[in-house]
Amino acid sequence: MAKHERGLRFQPTGGSKAPQIPAGKKQRLTIERLANDGRGIAFFEGRTWFVIGALAGEEIEARVLGAHGKVVEARTERVFNASQLRRPAPCAHAGRCGGCSVQHLPHNEQLALKQRMLAEQLSRVAGVAPQEWAEPLTGPEFGYRRRARVAVRWDMKAKKLEVGFRAAGSQDIVGIDDCPVLVQPLQPIMACLPQMLRRLSKPQALGHVELFSGSTLAVLLRHMAPLSDADLTILKDFCALHQAQLWLHGDGEPQPVEAGQSLGYRLEQWGLELAYRPGDFIQVNAAVNEAMVAQALDWLKPTADERVLDLFCGLGNFALPLARAAREVVAVEGVQVMVDRAAANAASNNLHNAKFFQADLSQPLTDAEWAAEGFCAVLLDPPRDGAFEVVHKLKTLGAERLVYVSCNPATLARDTVELIKQGYRLKRAGILDMFPQTAHVEAMALFEAS
Image (cartoon, rainbow, N blue to C red):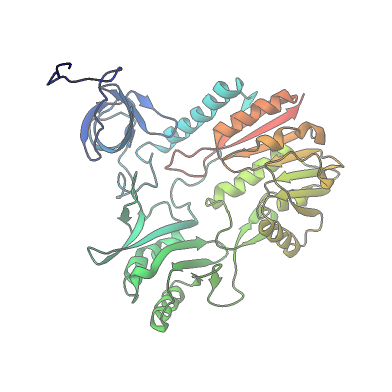
């Protein structure tokens, strides 16, 4: 019988596994550069650190939010050696609230960061640069957000209702009653909201709250249990005080407490009013939205004898202004309820040269009946995953000009590759500063047939 050896230790080939870094650990780091999302990048002991609130060249102390293999996500706790670019954060909740991740950068530097992000994606993925860079399309750097979702959660241990926004890198709620990026009409509502919600009899049954500012003000409350008459009175009195509509979202779809009320916003340059309901997509930045529509029409240059295609039309944000200029607009959206909403908006604005259709925009469009006549120009405003299948055969529609509005430079660059294959050239591009104080990049690109 073989003799058993005691005390032998075997290690798997490849060496020992590096210990994981626990959340909450603090580490002193030197930031090398900025990532595309505005976070600082540092390298330490074989790991890559992405640090919220840090700038290139700074020496900082970071707190770990989470670690995955060789990647560590963290936020800045202290700055030992600050960059010359750093400015005092305008918001008292900076570093805790997850909403405005680059407010420590001056606005012009935020724009430069976004411009670099767009240029790098176009160069790296598509191997192109536009023939002309447009100036950034900007609006107010604060007081721009006309819609916001406020997190609400009952803390069982503390027996307290938390009201505010999600914390950076976690599901914690940062108590907030003052948000500098909200439009001014929503500021008094936000300031008084926590106190009002804490008066309700069943705070543990509350979901989130949404705030809206447009043609009217509105407050929507998500609730998971029926509201008592007393609670409903508190909510109605609060909204009456702030001259806002009250919407409730229990079972089913959100509904206004007073039947017949609706939400809406204006596009002043075209004398248009667009109605929407909670849950519909609208741009949160009214000033940049209107400037974006104007720039899109200026670049596309539709004329009174042309047929224009608007893809991913939503509520008609582009289609209705296009209808003011073109002979005919064909607008297409993937969700039937939005098609109906856009058609109703056209009718209420007395526009009869815009037609609306539902189609699966993840598929090519060549078989659609409304595509048979072709188009002189096309406008696309897709979601973050882009419009790869749609652009695949756009040239067959005969469009000489194409404006692509993007909320994701990566998918814009990917789709640019396909458009170039079809014989389009990238004539012009520029960023749209829809979300100041954040690293989120929106862009517009003009393509012309060769």
